[in-house]
Image (tube, one colour):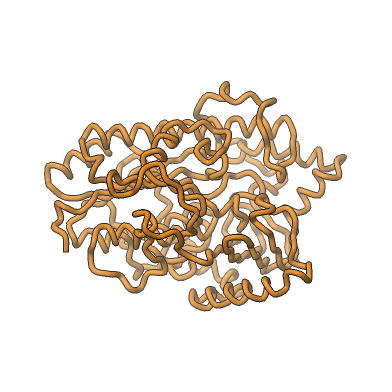
Length: 442
């Protein structure tokens, strides 16, 4: 094995509730000059996915290399099983110093024994500065997770003057109201604020002269709070930005459409660090893709959404999905129920201190009362058929459900079989697993 001082450092920077396609570097409207620069120095992935569009399950999916049901953290704000091992257990024994700063949403402590910063809202730049300095002095490689709180609601950071509401282009699945546009401007401004945090961290890496031996990964986490993004298995919820830089190792200014998942990031970092192989992980290394030596990684990626445990969810609305490079197949486990979350609660239930960021959704209800298209969007958000199928290439916003078109029956049979096989491998019993979440929630 490589000596400890010769192993690469790594820094993983993650946004919070950020739809990948809104980033400038992915063709979106939010200005992200630091991400654009980083992509020019490394590789941009266009088909990276997490397994679930919720904060705590996504982060624990990333840190354990295991899908949510297997690691135990598949409900909102839930914890992993105590016996699960995280990246720390794999890298500390080979000499790594491991730290996390910013948002946590993980537990229990025995699974994630990081060195934590006191700041639990945003990455602490002084902490990062000190951590890198101490690691250099100790001649030890380091692993750092910088977990940002932006652009999670309430969207209070950044300059909205950069985003005049009349110029904003809303995705077609959002109801176009002035309030939606004003909220969207605040959201885009906070993405730019996140990009500035990325720039600060990259500056610290340069100041400590560890750029050449540090793998940097930037992730966007799951989709934003806007409908059809977070808490869904649509691409706007599950698809993620991933930009990777490792000077002289990862080819600069390159792009890959290879499909990979958050569960693959841990084994990839382990592959670069060269500890003993870890057989029990769900993910697999995509190091050869990063090196430019391989164009493809996976044939399928999977999704899971557990609604029980979300604020205002009183009934099950579990979702599972499987996707290849052109088709997305979704199974709604409780089609008889209504999808509930913070956005669907009655305005009089909002408390000023907690749900005031939902002010804009009221305009959807008002417009739906008099506009057929707005009514149809709101109805679709809350009630969906047992199965959905979308041709991602032709229909990237997943608007036209092909599941009941006989021409796609063979494709549905294949995707359904792949999804069932994956669920069985995870111990996922569908409806039964969804209704057990009270046992696993912490």
